[in-house]
Image: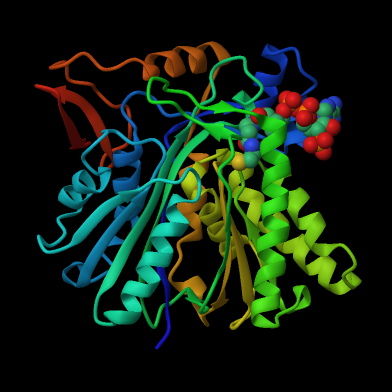
Length: 387
Ligand code: COA
């Protein structure tokens, strides 16, 4: 029995900042951001979008296609948690009207959280083949206005249904993991924005990629040339590009070209959306599936990285007719529907979103009808509403 990804849903908030405008405002050469970092836009979340509402919205895009009664597990991976105690997934479970006997919880290990959830879900489905699992990654990447990390912000969520005999990607057995207690990126309890040692984080990311990819190949007897595509956690596109350059070193021209072409296809959505932490690797998977050319059975390798730090490499095979399950036009519209902000508007929204909402003051959303949003707190209890 195969277990894997059967549905993929994606949501990003309805506002964006153009990276060229940001470059001019920060007295930087636009090519540093466009080429050196590899980004062209970034989504901006206002006060009414958080990890919960974005996770609901991502899942809604496929919810009417699945058998809700069979969902036995709901996991959210996030580093933008809305409560120190209660899992963000409970608000989501309620909005999605999942069964009372669903097992649900939140996982945290920086950007690795969604991968941890997928691995748990894969093994759960193997033991319970008549049940499925929803795994969500949902985050707002915030580094602060006028910092080095500012250009690598973003917001969004990817949701997946993991089930037996999947329609999109059959996950292979095994994985290769590597962890170390380091301080490349973290967010203390009293801070709404991340602290980062940016250059160090780039070095560690590449080191973890080399270790886990090599270890995976040794364990499985697979070679780089066996992969149709390699996907990477994409905090910014240039980071994945650097890892891909390491992967293709010494490969034949055909292998290098294939992996480069598919990397470009995988980075298309991230270039527009920015960093969405836990879900960035999976936005790359969606982008590859919708913009690349893959044949049934194509082997895809996935490198997940969470600062702190945890790395993991695993793989899956593309299922025939996967494209019929996806809605490329809807995913592209999710990106193109966004309204452009000036740098001043972005700064105002950014600073407003950092504040704790005033209790018992209802927040209004300018989202389209049908989307969920955070409506403020009522007697300190978070309220979520559908527009
Ligand atoms: N045209 C083209 N490229 C240019 C350029 C120009 N005019 N000016 C600079 N560059 C290139 C640099 O050569 C560099 O390329 P390289 O990475 O191949 O060496 C790149 O742009 C970035 O320049 P750098 O000076 O390193 O930028 P920075 O000091 O502003 O920091 C980050 C960049 C990514 C470290 C910073 O944005 C950050 O801390 N981000 C958050 C951390 C993160 O996401 N880490 C990833 C691991 S999870």
